[in-house]
Image 1 (spheres, chains in turn brown, yellow):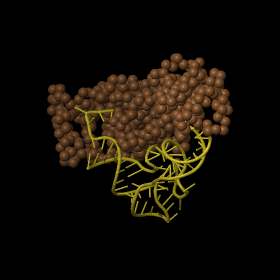
Image 2 (cartoon, chains in turn green, red):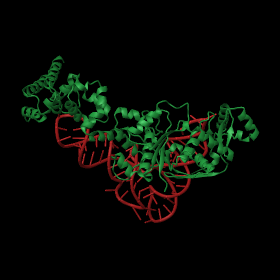
Image 3 (cartoon, rainbow, N blue to C red):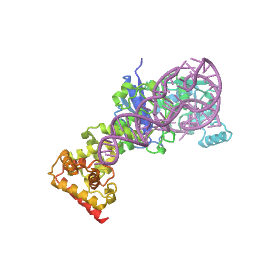
Image 4 (cartoon, rainbow, N blue to C red):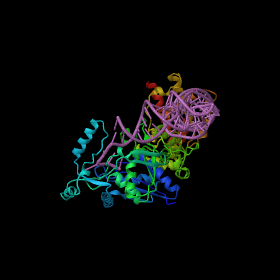
Length: 481
RNA sequence: GGCCUCAUCGUCUAAUGGUCAGGACACCACGCUUUCAAUGUGGUAAUCCGGGUUCGAUUCCCGGUGGGGCUGCCA
């Protein structure tokens, strides 16, 4: 058995997107699972579409997800002589030919064919050129491409690991351009040549490549090369069941990371889109994925990317974090929200995080959630109202809370402060005091409980004053309304 | 249009020639609770349609329908 070798072969045309991440993951897993090699190859054969910085982003993203590659990045743009040589070889064997047709002619041909309801195909016009004619044009430096010479009337079939036997008639195949007029290869030539030269055993890629796979099969046979295994992954779909793409909103992995999705969660989520372990386990780390992964558990049908389930999964991962780890990861978001962390004791910040940890779906939510810890909240006094009580009763409740706090000796434990309140409330309605108290502290309809919040404030030297100040503010608001 | 391909709850999916068609997200109800979250319990919800094969088909076959992909000197 030869060593398993897979490759991730993105084109550097922007930020790595979520579909690419899944492809890379599966390729990585399959290589690791078999103690093989995972190779990064950059398909930068379209000069016009290449975006500076993409390569760095791809490398960095793979690193962020611990999808370490063993070889590469290999840039196709630095291997032009190799592709040229192979294109030449095909010409020599009669499997390819020079084409001098201008783009205008091709456009017109296509238009005509479409009007006649014929499939757009090159008409092999330049194949009719004599050897001398071709030579003359080449000597005259006429712009040209090299096309593959697809034979007529052949059945081309290949076995796909996921889909089984796929077969098409060569009559449905176009004489694909292999080498462009700028000397760069097209995907079809470059990928095929490289996959062979790099000893790729499993060509794992998106299903959008199925229609051109027969062309690649033809190329392999032209060269006399053995076929690798083809694994065409089901597509990742948007909510409208279209291929996930930039047009359909957020797909850049970088954007997800910036919103505060944890790489572990994102990877776990994406792993389950098109693959599943056939058990009921849903939470997987990279090591577990490597153990469980296999190609025969891959699905055929496209999978809709459901952000709600990702949110849930991210929450699961956030909750599983040690609070110190959460702090390290979430600090940038707190700073971005304008909180001057250095002004607060670490203990205070950790307590705050502990309060919100179970509530977070993504790290970016933290600023909005905890801002009342850093500045006095603004809110509509009506929010203070518990059930239907009137303002007099409300302010009485707040006064009671005030009195209890005043009598408390800070610093104080959560239990002590809680006991103090419950002793005062007795068997009366707890909400009558606790609801307005909590709103006075947070300005929010939904938040952690008042004891937890006061417990966090208690860490601050002026914690008691802050609490009393907010109670006073609440009482004033009631009188103003 | 042509070629290729896919089809189980709204979504991700499991399973089987005979099951109450299972799990997860979301949703709903209840419990816990001052609110929210987390958590616990329960619930609503699916085999695209039509023919075959078969004692029996969601599963196998054929045909339809629907979706998707491709149809570039993009990848």
